Amino acid sequence: MAIASTIRPCCSHLHLSQIIPKYPYHFSKSQKCPHRYEVVAQAASTAPAPHPTFDPVGAGSATPPHILLHGLKPLVFTPLLPFPEKTRNVDPVRHVPIPRTESVAEREAWKLLKQSVVNYCGKPVGTVAAADAGAFKGELLNYDQVFIRDFVPSALAFLLKGETEIVRNFLLHTLQLQSWEKTVDCYSPGQGLMPASFKVRAAPIDGNADAEEEVLDPDFGESAIGRVAPVDSGLWWIILLRAYGKITGDFSLLERVDVQTGIKLILNLCLSDGFDMFPTLLVTDGSCMIDRRMGIHGHPLEIQSLFYSALRCAKEMLTFNEGSANLIRAIKNRLSALSFHVREYYWVDLKKLNEIYRYKTEEYSQNATNKFNIYPEQIPAWLVDWIPDRGGYLIGNVQPAHMDFRFFSLGNLWAIVSSLTTPKQAEGILSLIEEKWDDLIGTMPLKISYPALESDEWRIITGSDPKNTPWSYHNGGSWPTLLWQFTLACIKMGRPDLAKRAISTAEKRLLDDNWPEYYDTPTGRFVGKQSRLYQTWTVAGFLTSKLLLEKPELASILTFEEDLELLEGCACRLSRNGRTRCSRQAARSQLLGNCA
Ligand code: GLC
Image (cartoon, rainbow, N blue to C red; front, side):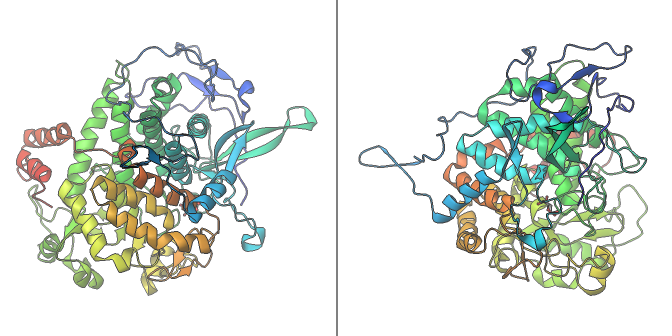
C-alpha cells in the first residue's frame, strides 16, 4: 500500500472549542531532521506565547515555566539496570543478587526487538510493525511502518529495561505529526488526530535532485485499508506519555507547552459536543486495534476503556492554570459519567443476563429499567450456556436496541487496568477468563474476540471479508500481543499465577513459530492464514509480560486505582437532577461492588 504523500502547512484550519486555548503554532510541511524544524507563529490576531522550539532529543530546549502537575508522582524504585544485566532475586544466605538467566525465547526476542528499531536522522524513533521480508511475495503493505498502537509494548519493554531515549523520541516526533493537515479527498479530520502509523522516507532535498534527506510520512487513515481514522492512537499516546513520565521522572517533558497542547488537542477531539446521549465515545467501525469492519461501530468497549484510561492520565498530567481549568473540569465530569455508564450497562453476569431475559420493552419514562429498549431475543444462544455461575464481563457494545454480547479481550483487560470497572467486576472478569480458559486462552493466548461471527452474520457484518473468516484474524483469532495486557491486569488483581500460566503456554510455541502476528482456529492451533511472522508487537508483548512479572511494582506506570472523588462526582450530579434510579446510593453500591 502506498503511504501518505501530501503534507501541506496547516495554518488555515484551526477549529478549537472554547475549552482549549488558542493553538498558536503550526509546523512547516514535511517533518525533517531536527535542525530543519521550524515553529511558525500564527496570524497576528493570536498573541504568540513563548514556545520552545521543537527539539526531539531535548538538547537546548527552552526551560519550561514551572508548572504544577496534578497528581503525577515519580515512582520510588531502585534505578533500572542497563540492558542486559538482571538482578531481581537475592541469595538468602549471601544477600547478593542472583542474576536471572534469560530463556532462549527471551534472548531471541530481544535480538528481534532491537533489529526492528527504526532510526530517523540517526536517532531511534520507533519499531516496524513486522520484519517479515519474505511474507506474501514481499508485499509489505504497511507492515514496514511504525504503528502507534504497535509501538506501545515495544516502548514498555524498553522502558522497563531502562532504555528511555527511543520512547522520548517517539513521543515527540509523533506529537509533531499530530499538527499536520491531513486530507481524505476534500475533507480534513480534526486537528488533534494522531496518525495510525508513520514511515521514514528518503526525499530529494528542495531544489537539488541529487541530494536526499529523511522525512517522516504519517498515515492518518487516508491510505489505510478502509480509510478509517485511528481513534485509539491519540489515547495510546497519552497513556504512554504518563508511563514514560512515571518511570523516568522526566516531568520537564510533560510540562512542555507543545506536549501540554498535544494532550489538549487529543482531548478536544474526544470531548467535543455532538448529538450524543451517552458519555461513551462514538466512533466508526475499525477505529482501533480491530481496524477492519467487524461490527464494532458505535460505542465499542475497547475505545471506551482506552478513553477512560487516557482521561485519567490527562487529569494527572495537565498543568492547572486558567487556560486548562475548564478542560480539567470537563475531564472529571466525563470520567464520572463514563464509569457509571459502563459499570451499569456493559456489565453482564448470570444474574444480569437473567434480568435482561425478563426485560419489558417499549418503556417510555425516565425511570425505565430497560433504558435502551433491548429485546430479550437478542441474547445469543451461545451465551446461555457459556456464562459461568461465577464472574462476568463487559460486553462489546451498547446502543439503542442493541447489545453486542461478544467478549473482547482488550476492552475487558484495559477496563481492569484503568479501574473503569468496580474492583468486584475486575475480579469477575479474571475469574471468567479462568473458567473459560480453553475458549479464551486455548493453545495460544489471547482471543481478540469471542466467539467468531459465522455464516450470514459474517457475510453481513464483515462485508464478506476473506481475512476475517470465522476463527481467523479479528474474527475470533488469537493474538499473542495481548499477553502483556493480560499480565498487567493479572498483576493488578493479584493473580500473577494466571499470567504465568498463559506465558508458559505461549513461550516455546512463539519461538518455534517465528513470532506470528495471530493464530487461527477456535483454540488457536494454527498460525494465522495471512499472519506475518516476526511481528514486533508479538515479540514485545512477550518481553513486556516477562518484565512485568519480574518487576510487578512497575505495573503502576500503567494502572489506576478506584477514584472516590469521581464516583462522588457522578452521584452528586445525578441526585441534583432528581434521577432516582442513578442515585448517590447507586454510585456507592458500585464502589462497594454490590451491583457487580
Ligand atoms: C493490523 C492490525 C492492527 C495493527 C496493524 C500493524 O492492521 O489489525 O491492529 O496495528 O496490523 O500490526
